[in-house]
Image (cartoon, rainbow, N blue to C red; front, top):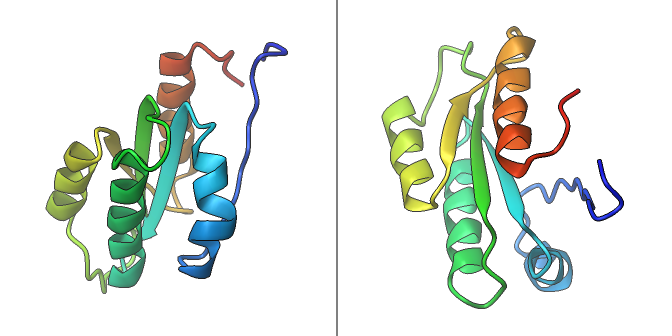
Length: 123
């Protein structure tokens, strides 16, 4: 990374209270965003949809690259489909990757893509 690169990793757990106090101020500085939802929890998927929409609405600075990660692809009781996730990724202007703790290489491939697009040295 160069000295011009700033990385902020944050987990907002889908709580609306975080939008005004944390997410919106941080979003003004973003050049890329990674959203993660749980295939077994529709609320996390809808939170991503709502948050990405707010971020792209003009209330905050436009960011470049967006990555949508669907977690728990190995679980059988999914309530969000891969097709829905692919459509959401298209809506928010990003790419979609299905990931699972049982397949760590899938997570690495997703982040390798993100780093490649942003010209950040890979691991």
